[in-house]
Length: 188
Length: 244
Image (cartoon, rainbow over all chains, first blue to last red):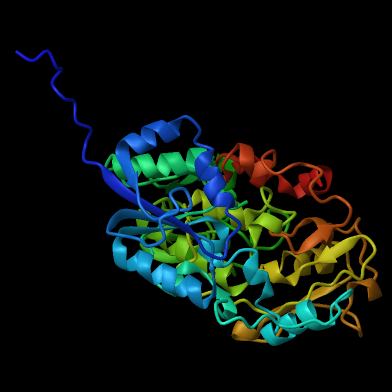
């Protein structure tokens, strides 16, 4: 007779994908701030496309966390892939939710921005606006995620705390309606 | 005269003659969300955040006189849904970039968004172009955050006697202006000692060289949600200058 323990299977494993678009990776750093709870997380989810795995394309997933707004054509493609592949799409952080810091350029003319940064700014010699075909073209304005695809949930914060992300993710995994009360809900 | 009372969400609340629903609720320590109301100024009922149902009718709590036996509903999912939608419209009409705002944590708009669990803007962002006015030596005006509550207009006109501020334009074009030929705050007699310098519920009128002296995380609404600061909301009359 086998002496093996009856296997204790965890509840259904879920699949999680994350990406950073026009963001600073601060929200991903905040995800790492869940510290030792990362071990519990990887017991419960497989991580698909994410800066943590370096997987480049997103397969079918349960939860997609999107950091950052939409500032160029590549952001749009990645975001649409996430929306197509993820059952639940979550906008994480100020930039994904209202454009955040990158959107502070929205009242400026994009052409003039590029001119000043690459041609006429102080200290520039032999300046050139980058035009390598591999570079994604910038959009005229920076947009929040919900202006491009349907978004199921929002986690505000710049960044949201590790505790807020953990509360949200575990609420979802445990089948509860995710809820961030005071003091986890903050915009700064 | 016998004590008179109304009910707010089923709780009996006493009131005196001449009091509004908001006056009675603040005195009783009951929180009704509001932005443009301030106990020191004549209520104008413009922000509509304090909309309640009084005997079945939608009214602004800050302008509606209390009456005997009035049944007021305030903290209901239906009203809070409407309030959240109004907040979302306020957020997308301006440029409310909380992470860079010196008022973050002390801002009534933000505190109400927390209270009503506004997680996202829902509507498309307007991203209006509103240059700041940094001309005054002691005060920065950041029009990006203006919600048109007219508290600075009322304070400057009614308390300071200076009428430094006004609203101009109509509808979506309405905006805050400064009463000077140049339109610049430096060309008025505005001073940091004015009442108007301390009533902005958001981050439009900002004292210079103060910045983040109180760190993010230790500010008024970081510690406690606004619904538990009714005492502070009710006694803002005298405390604005003190706390600034």
